Length: 69
Image (cartoon, rainbow, N blue to C red):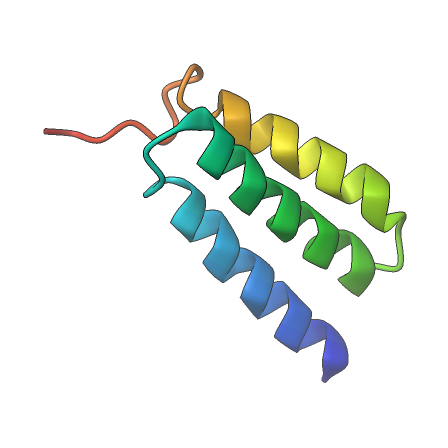
């Protein structure tokens, strides 16, 4: 049950990363999501946060979190 709460929180934070306006705010949301996912899967939280921050910062450049309007 504990893991499912963390995974749901991580999915929610990941969804919010696309709504952020700047690379810094997306990186912060990605870091939080990465840390939560790493903790839920018993991995290194710092590594998860670093990977999440990188993914959040670069998602706009990759075209994943661009707005359609």
